[in-house]
Image 1 (tube, rainbow, N blue to C red):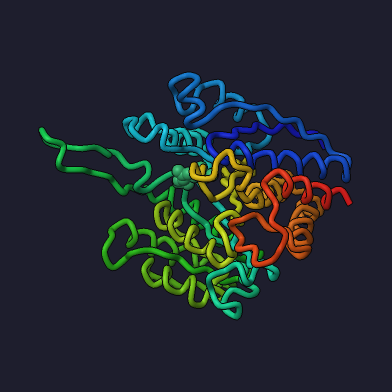
Image 2 (image 1 turned 120 degrees about the vertical axis):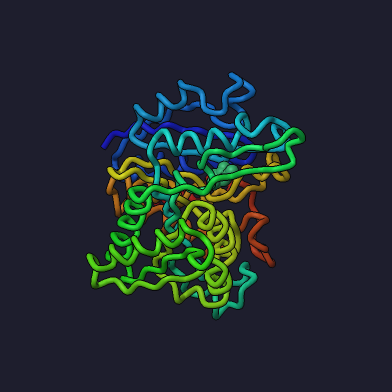
Length: 357
Ligand code: GGG
């Protein structure tokens, strides 16, 4: 199989960890006889520096002509004072919208050898395997108007808007995933307060009738936030809107021990995808070879699974990550506690080597 991948390193540690994804795909290519070709382009702050635009046209065109996209991370203090429509994060939101990447899958898997890296009690974090499905192209992050008002700009407005069709397609995606997993779907909303959540709940109930084999529960987002870290094993698939999904998945990363362990797949309805770690650009450690590349490496496994249907190849990456963690290699974020501390580059090399074996 031959595939062209657009690689957008972005900013901060994004530029360091993205090498993890390309290195493991090269290793997969060698082992299984596939060819992956990588073409690079800028997004976020790097693109602002180069062309004054967080998502240049060339970058978008390259993505459209590719079979899938890797993205590192965007943002950093260098661009903090820019107006919001010019910030690096605007490039990330725009690429999701332009490519129609409405379904963001964020698997949360507790690796046994990392149990003591998690702030949760081992018996709570052990054997967790849940999937957060975050709606990615609607809600507060995209609603208009989003502005300051009045002469002195002392009033601010953000708009939470969803269409029925936007909610229907993400709920359908979540049911499809629940069917091939453990057939339990938790829909998270704030239906006691928000009109958008009331429509969300109605649609979940309508769709539930089409998937009688799936057990469905509704949960308010505040209750879900507590339950995620007190009884995470109660969850299988969690579906929620854009902002709630962003926050809950960062919270859920604590089950795994580090935000650096959470990969993500952002998908269209027809299998095209952008793959990125859940974490951001971590400017405080950028350039120090300290970032955890596992989230990016595991995102490469998601690409093989969801965009190219290469299941065995994807498993070879997941297996390699497991072996390397079992062997005691740790980046500094994983509370090494006597294990072997390695830098980003070393960790990437070790995992790629395990994929080849
Ligand atoms: N790799 C993810 C990343 O760069 N995150 C920074 C960020 O601004 N995230 C907001 C979001 O995912 O909606």
